[in-house]
Structures are given as C-alpha cells and as structure tokens.
Image: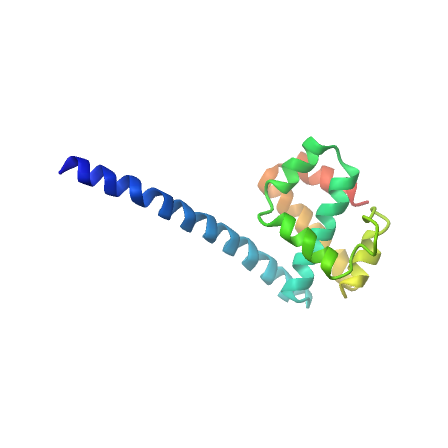
Length: 141
C-alpha cells in the first residue's frame, strides 16, 4: 500500500511542475497584455517591445548582468525573436539609439514608449532587485 502511494505521488510531481511552469508564462503574458491595453498597444507590440529592450540590454551589458535581467522575463527569447520577425532590428542589432527606431518599426509611438520602458524596467527592479533594474535602464539610455 505504501509503495503504491509513493509511486502515485512521484508520478504526479512532473505533472504538477509542468502546470506551474505553464501558469508562470500565463501570468507574465497577462501582465504584458494588461500593460499593452493601458498604453493602447497590442499584446504582440508589447511582447516585441520587451524583446527589443532585451536585445539592446544584451548588446550593451556584460553577460552576467544580462542573465539577471533575462532570468525574470519568461519567454524573453521568444519576444526577441518576435521583435526580429516584425522588423524591429532592420538587419543590425539595435543599440540604445536604435531602440526608438525599433519601437517605430513595431508601431509603438514615442508617447507609448515613454511609458512602456519605465514600466518594464520597474518590473525588472521589482522582480530582480533595484540594481538589476537600474542596469537595464542604463543600458537603454
């Protein structure tokens, strides 16, 4: 009886963990969707905007700093790829000066970007610590 119970428990752990992973992505997507809605953007624009911000951060920061940022944004690699597919990078990887043109290619207005960037960096600060959020904000300047 005890062996059967333990086998059942151990068999269900992976299922429970996979459910947790899925819900984490859903929470992240809902936050991005809510922010997009507040700013008058589509969810796809917001996801690609996060991707553009991540790519600029990756280019401008050392790998250890960037890894701290990337670790708190589930699906970040997918967002970077979405930004690339939607034309945000126009051949070259964007620099901080090119972030505005990346946003423009995504259809994000300067007014939306002015509110979007601080919202994302504030999220990173809350999730990973103030110093990590500041390193991202500085990379985007």
